[in-house]
View (tube, rainbow, N blue to C red):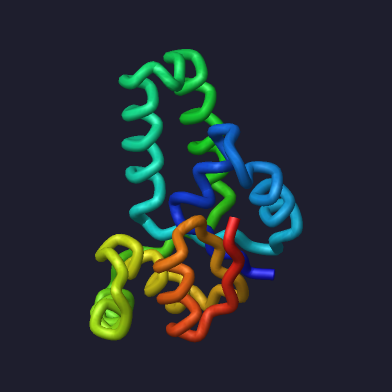
Length: 137
Protein backbone atom coordinates (compact mmCIF):
# COMPACT_ATOMS: atom_id res chain seq x y z
CA UNK A 1 0.00 0.00 0.00
CA UNK A 2 1.22 3.51 -0.87
CA UNK A 3 1.42 5.37 2.43
CA UNK A 4 1.93 9.13 2.64
CA UNK A 5 3.04 10.55 5.97
CA UNK A 6 2.92 14.18 6.99
CA UNK A 7 5.73 15.59 9.13
CA UNK A 8 3.92 15.09 12.45
CA UNK A 9 3.45 11.38 11.83
CA UNK A 10 6.83 10.73 10.18
CA UNK A 11 8.55 12.40 13.17
CA UNK A 12 7.28 9.59 15.37
CA UNK A 13 9.81 7.29 13.69
CA UNK A 14 12.72 9.30 15.07
CA UNK A 15 11.55 10.66 18.41
CA UNK A 16 9.80 8.28 20.79
CA UNK A 17 6.34 9.64 21.60
CA UNK A 18 2.72 8.56 21.62
CA UNK A 19 1.94 6.88 18.30
CA UNK A 20 5.54 5.90 17.50
CA UNK A 21 4.84 2.16 17.57
CA UNK A 22 1.79 2.60 15.35
CA UNK A 23 3.79 4.60 12.78
CA UNK A 24 6.50 1.92 12.77
CA UNK A 25 3.86 -0.70 12.04
CA UNK A 26 2.31 1.39 9.26
CA UNK A 27 5.71 1.95 7.64
CA UNK A 28 6.64 -1.73 7.94
CA UNK A 29 3.46 -2.68 6.06
CA UNK A 30 3.87 -0.02 3.34
CA UNK A 31 4.91 -0.99 -0.18
CA UNK A 32 5.89 2.66 -0.81
CA UNK A 33 6.28 5.67 1.45
CA UNK A 34 5.65 9.18 0.17
CA UNK A 35 6.74 12.45 1.77
CA UNK A 36 6.36 16.07 0.79
CA UNK A 37 9.58 17.90 -0.03
CA UNK A 38 8.73 20.03 3.04
CA UNK A 39 8.93 17.09 5.44
CA UNK A 40 12.69 16.86 6.03
CA UNK A 41 13.23 20.58 6.72
CA UNK A 42 10.20 20.59 9.03
CA UNK A 43 11.54 17.61 10.98
CA UNK A 44 15.06 19.01 11.25
CA UNK A 45 13.56 22.28 12.52
CA UNK A 46 11.42 20.46 15.11
CA UNK A 47 14.32 18.31 16.27
CA UNK A 48 16.51 21.41 16.64
CA UNK A 49 13.81 23.13 18.72
CA UNK A 50 13.77 20.08 21.01
CA UNK A 51 17.57 20.08 21.16
CA UNK A 52 17.62 23.76 22.12
CA UNK A 53 14.96 23.35 24.81
CA UNK A 54 16.81 20.38 26.30
CA UNK A 55 14.20 17.70 25.59
CA UNK A 56 16.60 16.10 23.08
CA UNK A 57 20.30 15.75 23.76
CA UNK A 58 22.91 16.44 21.08
CA UNK A 59 23.54 12.68 20.84
CA UNK A 60 19.81 11.94 20.47
CA UNK A 61 19.53 14.68 17.85
CA UNK A 62 22.46 13.28 15.84
CA UNK A 63 21.01 9.76 15.95
CA UNK A 64 17.50 10.93 14.98
CA UNK A 65 18.85 13.04 12.11
CA UNK A 66 20.98 10.14 10.82
CA UNK A 67 17.97 7.80 10.92
CA UNK A 68 15.84 10.45 9.17
CA UNK A 69 18.34 10.82 6.35
CA UNK A 70 18.59 7.03 5.94
CA UNK A 71 14.80 6.63 5.79
CA UNK A 72 14.37 9.46 3.32
CA UNK A 73 16.58 7.62 0.82
CA UNK A 74 13.90 4.92 0.55
CA UNK A 75 10.94 7.30 0.28
CA UNK A 76 9.34 8.99 -2.71
CA UNK A 77 9.79 12.75 -2.26
CA UNK A 78 6.94 14.69 -3.83
CA UNK A 79 8.00 18.08 -5.20
CA UNK A 80 6.05 21.32 -5.28
CA UNK A 81 4.76 21.36 -8.84
CA UNK A 82 2.12 23.55 -10.43
CA UNK A 83 -0.43 20.76 -9.96
CA UNK A 84 0.42 20.47 -6.25
CA UNK A 85 0.16 24.23 -5.73
CA UNK A 86 -3.22 24.40 -7.52
CA UNK A 87 -4.46 21.47 -5.44
CA UNK A 88 -3.27 23.19 -2.24
CA UNK A 89 -5.12 26.36 -3.21
CA UNK A 90 -8.30 24.36 -3.72
CA UNK A 91 -7.84 22.69 -0.32
CA UNK A 92 -7.24 26.06 1.37
CA UNK A 93 -10.41 27.44 -0.19
CA UNK A 94 -12.45 24.45 0.98
CA UNK A 95 -11.42 23.78 4.57
CA UNK A 96 -9.78 25.66 7.45
CA UNK A 97 -6.25 24.26 7.30
CA UNK A 98 -2.78 25.79 7.49
CA UNK A 99 -0.73 26.36 4.35
CA UNK A 100 1.93 23.70 4.96
CA UNK A 101 -0.72 21.17 5.96
CA UNK A 102 -2.57 21.83 2.70
CA UNK A 103 0.68 21.35 0.77
CA UNK A 104 1.23 17.95 2.43
CA UNK A 105 -2.30 16.89 1.49
CA UNK A 106 -1.88 18.18 -2.06
CA UNK A 107 1.40 16.25 -2.40
CA UNK A 108 -0.36 13.09 -1.21
CA UNK A 109 -3.13 13.58 -3.76
CA UNK A 110 -0.64 14.20 -6.57
CA UNK A 111 1.39 11.13 -5.59
CA UNK A 112 -1.71 8.91 -5.53
CA UNK A 113 -1.52 7.93 -1.86
CA UNK A 114 -3.70 5.04 -0.79
CA UNK A 115 -3.47 6.16 2.85
CA UNK A 116 -2.66 9.56 4.36
CA UNK A 117 -1.27 9.45 7.92
CA UNK A 118 -1.20 12.46 10.24
CA UNK A 119 -1.53 13.56 13.85
CA UNK A 120 -3.42 16.73 12.96
CA UNK A 121 -7.25 16.59 13.01
CA UNK A 122 -7.78 19.53 10.64
CA UNK A 123 -5.24 18.16 8.19
CA UNK A 124 -6.94 14.76 8.30
CA UNK A 125 -10.28 16.45 7.59
CA UNK A 126 -8.74 18.26 4.62
CA UNK A 127 -7.27 14.99 3.34
CA UNK A 128 -10.62 13.26 3.65
CA UNK A 129 -12.32 16.09 1.77
CA UNK A 130 -9.63 15.78 -0.93
CA UNK A 131 -10.64 12.14 -1.39
CA UNK A 132 -7.88 10.43 0.58
CA UNK A 133 -8.31 7.55 3.00
CA UNK A 134 -6.83 8.72 6.31
CA UNK A 135 -5.44 7.40 9.56
CA UNK A 136 -4.79 9.36 12.73
CA UNK A 137 -1.73 8.48 14.81
